[in-house]
Amino acid sequence: MEENAYLTAVVAGCFYMVAAVRLLRLSLRTRERPELMLSAYFAATGIYYLGYNSPNIFRFDALPPQVETAIIWQYLIGVFPYLFFIRRVFRPKSAWASGMVAVCGIFLTLGGAHLIVESPLVESLDNPWFIVMWLGYALPAAWLGWEAMLAHRSANKRARIGLCDPVVANRYLLLGWFGCFQTLAVLVGLYWAYDKDLHQATSGFADMLLGGTEVAGVSMLWLAFFPPARYQNWLAKRALILPGPTDG
Image 1 (cartoon, rainbow, N blue to C red):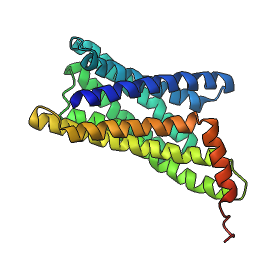
Image 2 (cartoon, helix red, strand yellow):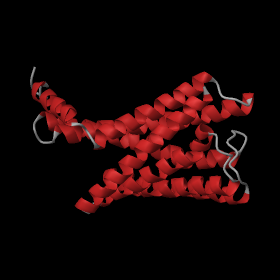
Image 3 (spheres, one colour):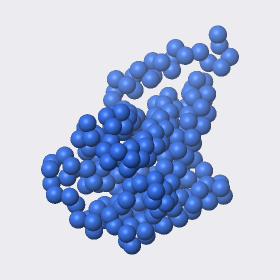
Image 4 (tube, rainbow, N blue to C red):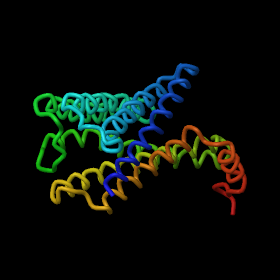
């Protein structure tokens, strides 16, 4: 069952890489920084998923500690543009949002610095540096989920009276769900580490949860940024039949 979790992570990594390339092309065309920031984060996540899990799928030798550390480090660096994206899009003038970026940045830096001293990473609840690093990438996921859901609530009200594109309003919702599933995935990852640390193996339940949250998160991401025409048409028709705030 553990191999299924690794396989799901590799598939998710491929989707992240495709999304990164498409967002990079979009940012070059629009010259907008948010797309570039997300592209950098998705690329770092894709590299992490592919590099960290491929040896377990294709029966390669275990990664050298230096390579494993480099893969984790590039992911931690990639979380920084993710934080900048959330702040720029949702809280550009908020002092507490800047503080949130700083706190997460400190956690990421401390966790990454510890990897230089002690490598490879010990994914255990008994390792305080692992928990510090985990907080550095778990908090941004929860933050995005919260902010995007709030933005969707506001945009959805405007969409009902024709002041906001229903596709845009729905994109906030999908981003919110992406953040929620990401948060669930990192929480399951913590449970996965606990299970493996306690029993020297992971349960099928933990593997199923980890794979399911990763697939769900990638699905929300794909619909948010690359919605098929049929899905967009469905959103437009749905917006026409929903009652406005003073109807019904």
